[in-house]
Length: 243
Image (cartoon, rainbow, N blue to C red; front, top):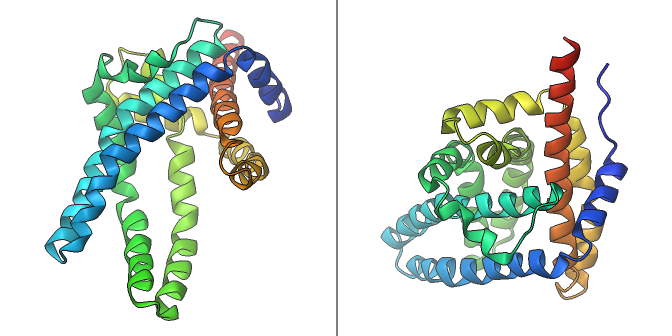
């Protein structure tokens, strides 16, 4: 019989692990946010010269999505290390650059390709609304976003463990990391979805506090996800021992 740790216990462990480390881990998020702004913001200027500029804009955004997967490895490293009681520092954010960055990009390529149309099409419709102020574009954006929402959430959940797996099993190829994430999430998608939804109220409060509260919410959320991964691995090991 499978006995997983409850969401409440995972969150309690996260709060305990974050004690004394909030400043370091929040600093990593601030650093990443600043880097994203200065790297991504210039690409928006490409939209000023349609249609070629728009094509280049979405191509650049796709490439940047792959590039920032390297930083996602760093985020996973920080919180996985903290969950295991190892020392952490903001420099861990750049771990992915000397820990097989090519593999991180290969891994991100799969979900990015799957979600290419679900991400780009609503963005185009919203841009049309902002440019013309015609409500039909806003309605189209809302309908298309709602249609694609289940797929977007499903893919994100399915591959939610992939960078933890990459760090934990460095001998695995990119394809094997993706397969392992899918295996780990088999029978656990509902648990992870519940965990994701449980952070929505805190995220809203964080936004309403002019974003200041997000410096608490983001580390709390990521630390809980790292604990979720460790719980999946522990359950898998217990299953092997009793087999």
